[in-house]
Length: 241
Figure 1 (cartoon, helix red, strand yellow):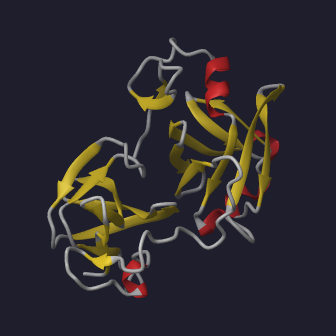
Figure 2 (cartoon, one colour; figure 1 turned 180 degrees about the vertical axis):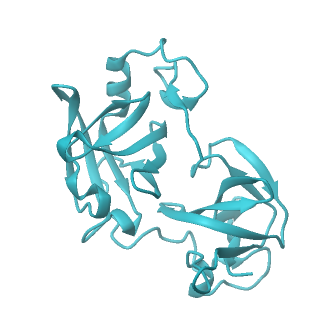
């Protein structure tokens, strides 16, 4: 999925948004808005705990300082950050671009160099590192709009059933599919309940797994957990069809 995220105009709610001119926001404004502590819960990029990064406002040469803790995989060599092709870029050794992110001041998502997608969320003051992934909002995560609680296997990321087979998922409720793995991202389409979708990749955030699904002629991100009537946590899709 191609992305053309650029800097938006508002200082009160600075964002990296699709299709808006960059000129209204200066680099200093951007740095002030996005500097601070961020975290990803995706196990693919963690080592001994959730990967936590601090984006510093100090600049050396053409990049800003960054400190990282418990980061693994592609992010084991993180050394800096900056504005890369009008996106927030995470920079590794030899100035290699490790990821390009878009989003807002509380949540960013985007492509990782070499494949995959990641979500980074801003950490509030005095936040504890979440080493074991997102916690459920209640003891029971309902299986769709039923009265039954989902099983641990229902909440796993969809994986291929065998060699040379695509991962698939059963959509359990009418579900919005979004352009990015964020609840405020634009809705691409709404998937009817009982639809079987092909899963291209998944990532993990504080609100559970997000997977990029292929349906008909489009691909978009779907969230595996939702809340019904502002009260009941619901599983929106399960592995397999």
